[in-house]
Image (tube, rainbow, N blue to C red; front, side, top):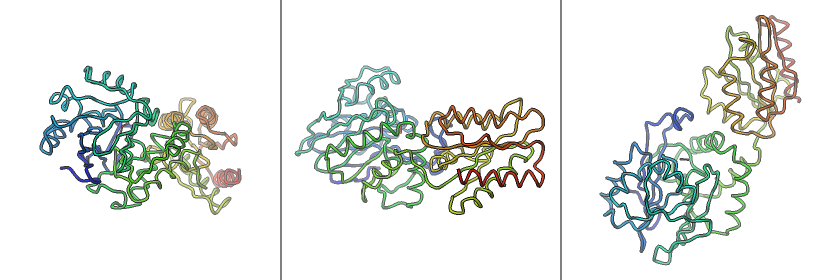
Length: 395
Ligand code: FEO
């Protein structure tokens, strides 16, 4: 069912209430998501983006019930990833000769995925198309936000920036706008999206935000491709992105561990106590990786100034849950964060050294040799773990 966004702009996307995993199984979506497609009906009729391919037929049928598909003049593909381009194949079977406006890289990704020679019209930043009634669409390339092919499209007069993934959130809702949903959900899903998807591109994002601001385009709405449209103070999310892109951190320390016989778990709890004694103002979070959602943990890592990683020693190394998590963090290219390591061992005891090496390679500043304890922590070892926590708090 279409919903009016503003004047002659309509939402024609799909709300996916059931979605719990995205990017295969890489990203948890506790609150579902939406795939936002927009229809503009001015002198020309324009479709911006489609939906994920499981919903392609439903999408095309719904669209056909709203308008004669042959009345669509232009299609804009802001991004080639399948959650937005997935409806194209079904749509283009019905209207194969319609032009698709996209970046040169999007041609590569769309051809690579769909193997079709559609009428691609390559656009660059600043290119415009006249859509009648005195309105234009202006294209802004957004390379690496978050794919090389990404772009945004700006609708003049209505002052709507169709930003695609940027500024989005995985949040299923029947409501269209940011002022209509729970603000805690909105903030949490926005920062989680940034932390897990956009962190590696923060430097590029800083430049792009400056470029968008320097274009002096009045922005009344930011219509993303996931979640709600920012209409109430839309620049609030741009300001948040500016903060998040600037090697963001809060006064928070996060302890992340896995454990075999609860010795390393006990150390985690004592280190947490020590940190709180050492700095009563610091926020401390503790996660057992084996029992936690990794994307939620990464969201807390994103907020942290220091990460304390723990694993017992196994096979002269560390538990694979911890190794895999550090590998994930390495890909996110965090900057300006410190790390410390801890763990129990029975015999050889390499885990702390291995964690320090991996965290250093992942771009963290290792601030201590770490704390390791042989066998289960006794009263002295627990006191030592508390002292270790105090040291980290003061580092
Ligand atoms: Fe990069 Fe929402 O797809």
